Structures are given as C-alpha cells and as structure tokens.
Amino acid sequence: MDRKGQGALEYLLLIGGAVLVAVIVITLLLGIADTGSTETEITTAAAMCRNDMALSGRTGDCEQVGPELVNNNSYTCGGIYPNCTATAP
Image (cartoon, rainbow, N blue to C red; front, top):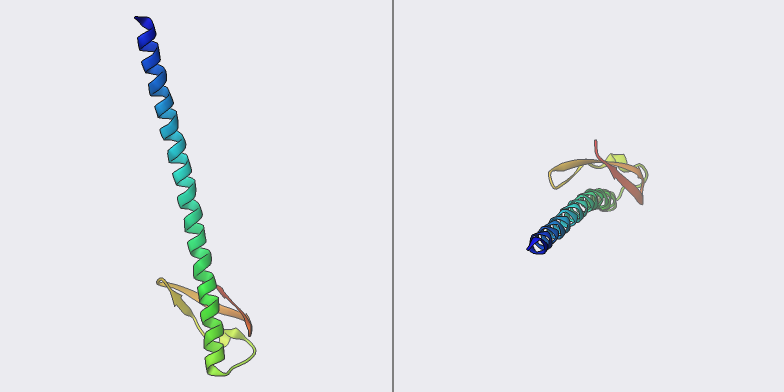
C-alpha cells in the first residue's frame, strides 16, 4: 500500500520538474526574441537612413537626414554614406 503513494508522489514531482523546465525555456526564448526585435529595428532605421541619403542625392555625413521612426521608436542617423548607422537617442 505504501508503494502506491510513493509512486504517485514521484509522478507529481516529475510533472512539476517538467513544468519548471518548460517555464524556464519559454522565458529564455521570449528574452531572445525581444533582443532580436531591437536589432531588427536598428537595422531597419539604418537602411532608412541610407535610402534617404540616396533619394536626396547627398553624400558624406548621414546625420544630414533623420531621425528615423521605426515602431514608434526614434533612431538617429550617423556614419558616412553609404555606411549609415542608426542609434537610439
């Protein structure tokens, strides 16, 4: 009779451990996805800076254009065309 209780407790502990591992993995994946989103916004803003420089026919300092707005975040243009960069203010 005691063996049935022990088996049930071990089963519950295994399920609890699996749930804990799943929560940790999901939390880590969401953190990585958020970081990738920020990097994507910076890359997009830099491309917009280069595009604005090309459309205006300007050369030289990319700070002549901008700031660029991506997902309601403002990014300042920098660098020398065609290697424009973007940074968050």
